[in-house]
Image 1 (tube, rainbow, N blue to C red):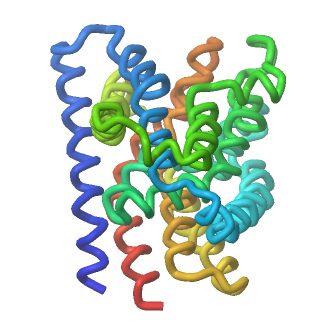
Image 2: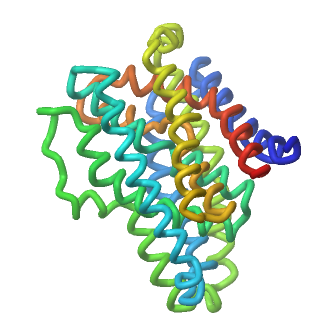
Length: 313
């Protein structure tokens, strides 16, 4: 159990250290004011797509798709469970619609992209990362359809159609990587192209956590810490909801690897989308920033503890 705990604590401490570095250097004004925008664009348009492409091109084959079809099925089931719990629970946090939508999104969707990918890559390796991305494909589709509609404040902008919402770099790279992998492109891809993708992919985790620290540094930390409701939301997100999802999948016969994928996907911290999307449309971002700060600190311990408990099942 201790070995499993340390196996996840080490990468979590690396990620948390990057958050602290991002927070400090932005507070010291070493970085320019537009740093959050620049880092966010690098993540969304370059680093995360490179990670997805690299993983799918290398590991996605016709044989693996058929062999791992259950992973995608369990990902769909986990998302349905999360939606069925998260949406009703959000009504406990706020009567105001826009704020309730933020809680609804946060209780359904964790930071499965930035933090989840980084954890899967560090703990499970390249093949495990591919399975993880396959597992959270349903959640990714949910983020850019239902999720975007939740996070854009009412009356603040025209909401995109479902099809246009899916035309984003992350989801497109997933489909492109799937196609290239199934076509066997990984076997003929030049070494330099593979190296470029791998090097860019390696930047995803650290830069994502630097971005988290920079985003939090823009706010009054003491004010963020005073939002008592966020502590309850973080406890649900980090402990109770992932434990229920993992337990249900276990009862349905999922193996330990699939349960680990579910933990990393739905037990990650609350993400930055609750800051990014409302900010883009002039909505309030303090609740999202408070969630990001408190939950990322909590995740340093919650993920290793839950992972260690899972390993002794």
